[in-house]
Length: 257
Length: 52
Length: 218
Image 1 (cartoon, chains in turn blue, cyan, orange):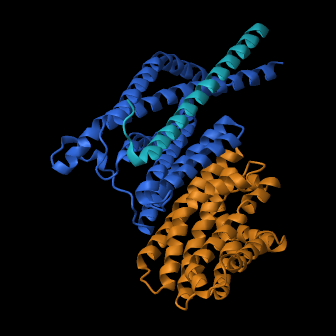
Image 2 (image 1 turned 90 degrees about the vertical axis):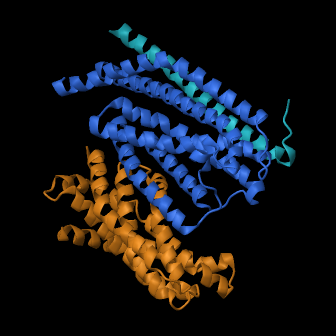
Image 3 (image 1 turned 180 degrees about the vertical axis):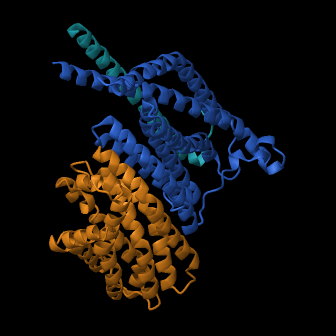
């Protein structure tokens, strides 16, 4: 075995091991904390907030719609970051983390789309509207789908990591471009991201003060979704590392046999 | 206990049901696959160490 | 470089592969649309720019999987990779050859098919302009997708899935130019955006395609 291959094997083994040990210790905390935040936030939002004067009780959907939409985008950003780390530093855990995150991202996108459609039915009078935000999320969904399909299709793990990383980079540029193009193509029905406005938090004007009641449970839900995302990424990355190790062990067995 | 959801009860409840279902499915699938892979790894590791 | 381009063009014409296929598909789509949506000429006139753009895009997509696959199979891609020509140039030439054999015929055929769809008078000019500006981007993006999936046995479906979201901005701006042109609105903004996308993809994407191809040839 050459020196380079030895160093490579060391990377494969030592560092993922450290990652597994660290995350194993942190995982229970993240699982519990995310469960607490989600339960508290959702129960608070569902049972103890009043109806909106315009939207009625459908305003309660916000506690699922906004956090999932937020995580759908942040998940892609995380994959972009880990893909870059893989391309620059060749850090195997990084590539596997990107792979582990993609299914979470697609589920988040799906939740945002489904809750949006269910909410849009009574509010806009239609399940689906070719509104910029909805359309962008549909495109994001397709990106996730293509990314995951590419991972599945390629046998060699390093080749797959390289190709999906480049796809993630190129896809990010095109996703931004699509967002702009779609905005240009149709000015939409969807309201702006008003929940994050400073006035809504501090309640400076009377109209916005109402959303204060909705804001704190929403914040809880957002924190819960973030913690859940972290827990899932850690857990799934661990799974990917183990799956990779199985492959390596089997390959070595075959060589020795 | 149940808050009055008015005429939008179906909408709100179906949105919650669909989202929670998706979340639970995601977590359950992750853990199911994680357990399976972990068990398989231990099996393979044992076999490899036995053979030297 | 020119030798490579001529070789690709010759192969495309002789094998009867990509050349006729895209055009035939384009023809089929446009001829079948009136049968499916009804023969009212006002309706056809409204949807004509979009249908023609969509047909062109799908025809482009259809011919992508043979863009690199044949060279991959007979091993000439390995030879090209070790040739003194940088791989970035190779993929650019490949994209250019694809455009000449697929995109250019589509651009030329579009006005003829526009007649069938009752495209309004001023629309012809803008349709041709937008397709001429947009189809090179389709070829370059398609080359990237083909480079990603070149090593796979059944890459066709995956290729379409990967390329589909990448085509969205080009389609939006391209069809917008054609639509605005057909209804006599100003077309400068989408036209500039379309030109910008095409220029940027031609300038940058070959580097990504070449990087991906190097990984696949490793």
